[in-house]
Structures are given as C-alpha cells and as structure tokens.
Image (cartoon, rainbow, N blue to C red; front, side, top):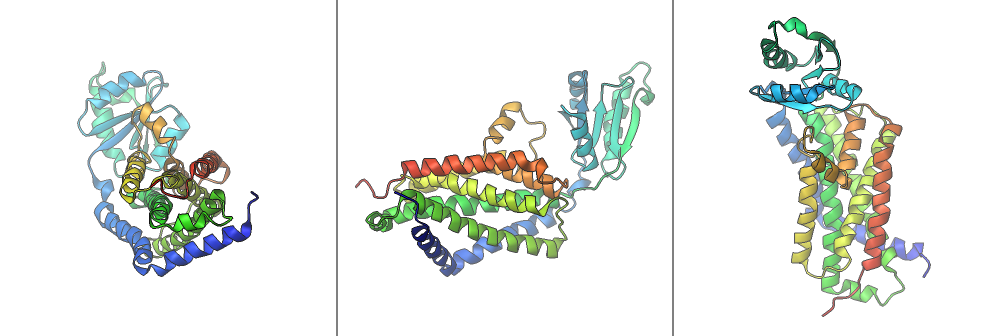
Length: 350
C-alpha cells in the first residue's frame, strides 16, 4: 500500500492535540530540565575548586609514566592517543596537565588560565622529578597554552538537553503506543487503511515537533538565565537535535511494536534509558574508561547526540566536524523505524 500523506497528517495532528491538552504533562516536560539545570548550577558552579586533578600522558613511554602518576594521591592518569586532541583538552580544561614522552627531555603542557594547572604541576611533575637521577624538575620542559575555560554547568548542559530529549522521545512513543494497544485504540485503527509505517512515522513526527519546541524554550531560557553560548554552528545544533531526537524516537518504536503490558513497557524502557544515561556522558566524561565501555557507548544514539552537541557548543565545531555523528543518527533512525514498522502488531493477542 502506498504512503498517504493525508492519513499521516491526521494522526500527526491528533497526537499533538492529545499532548497539548494534557496540561500537567506539558508543564512538567518544560519545567523538569530547568529545575535540573538550576540545581546543578548551584551544586557544581564551583566544581573547578576541587583538589583532584587529571593528567593526560602521550607518547611511547606513556604506560610507564601512567603507572608512576597513578600512584600519586588525588591524581588521575589518562592515556592519550592524539597529541592535538589532548592539547585541545588542556585548552578547554578537560585535562589539567599533559605529559608528552615523545620529547627528550619529556615535555608537559598546562593552561595558564586553569586553576588546577599549578596544582597538577606540584602533584605530578615535582613528585615525578624526585624519582629521577638527579632529582631536578629541569628534566621536564614546561609549555603553556591558553584557552576558554568550560565551566561544568556549560559542559553538563548538552548532557541535560540530551537526557531530556531521550525521555521525551523514548517514553513519548514507546509507552503511549502500548497504552493505545491496551485500551483498544489500535484495534479500531486496524480497520482503517492506515499502515503501520504511516502510524509510526506520524508518531515520530509529532514527538519530534514537541521535542524541538521544548528545546527552543530550554535553549532560550538557558541563554537568558545563565548566559550560555553556542561557539560553533547553529545549523549543526539544529541538525544534531533533530536527528538525535528522531533516532531516539525510532528506538522507542521497538518497544511499542508488540508490547501489550504497560508494566512490561515501563521496564523495557527503563532498561533502554538507564544504560544510555550512564554510558553516554550525560553526567561525566568517559575519558580514561576501558576501551570496551567506550565502544559500547558508540553504539548508543544518545552518545552521538551529546558528543556532537558538546563539540559544537563547547568547542566551536562546525557542520563538517560533526558529520559522523549526524550520519550515524540518521542511519539509526532508518533502521529502528524500519524494524518497528516491520514487527508492529495492531491488536492484542488475547
């Protein structure tokens, strides 16, 4: 059966009106991210004053130095595979010190504007030098970088935005369609010419429209309240938000396709969302995590959404620099929506 835009449009409009008429749900969808952002602003606004420091190590002797640095109190040693990327992390205060063991003597980099740079030198370089023969700090060449500090609340904002999108996307389709199946709405729709693909694509479009409306309000309010800025391309932000939302909504259709119980749907959706929150860098960076953890994270659409947004908002990336994230999320949208439509069932078994 051919795709009918008229049938698609009717389902799209009906779903939008259903959501907008639920005033409590509508208000909470917009209030929750603001409450989270305000709370984290006051809790972590001065997070840069903490004592612990993070040291990046690059070069052929990185493993040896990692073992020595890791033994120091309040120091986390993280291996780096790319020197330019590691320098950017120093400039943006994601690392407090970078040790390059390619040089002889070893060279280390700190940011002149980092409040932890001096502490990192005292904890790492001075103590490492004491193990040398002779024990002099001159065995290390000091280099400095300057960069724009990214406060934790600005680093966290893309994660908060992604988490809000994830919950609106996955629950807004997965749980709602299961409710439709349970109360007989899908059974009635099954007697019409409406196809599963038209129905699910209309649900996706409706939820995408509502998510983008929520993001506009959240972006505008955050810029006004906290002075946030997008250092890169606004077009990239729009595309990342749109494709990330689409991928997560389509992911929710996998639960909606056949599940009949709202309780089971809730469990499956929690099983889907909580690992994404933990592995997609919503709350903290995976810098230094095991390789297998980072590979699992790359299989999640939320990871690509948040990393893309952080690259644009925090690091000033353009459209080309986040094209990989955009491509992966577009592919995920097609795959998830196709699987959801293919496995979709209109009626309950009993």
